[in-house]
Image (tube, rainbow, N blue to C red):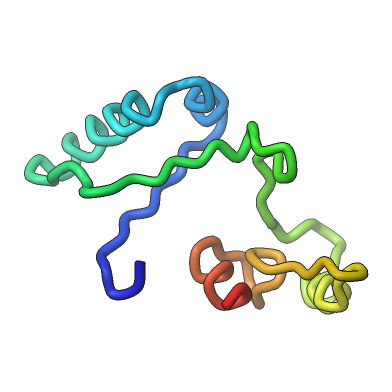
Length: 108
């Protein structure tokens, strides 16, 4: 998706749990209703990719965050070592919490 306009959105809390059981069309309809309330002339996207991280058995809806009394830098350095043939990329490997840019910068 390089050099193409992209809109990224997140659903959180109980709404995220509920969305896990909706179809892609139902989620898009809900999102577009909210966007149209803010931007009446917005058009439907040409393409959508909808993930369900809560149902992803390897992620279970996880995300990186700075935990109190932990060193983000030390944790990141330890993860950089990898485990056997497994390497890490994404938010936890970036210099500060971030989503899309963190994945891009650490995974390419």
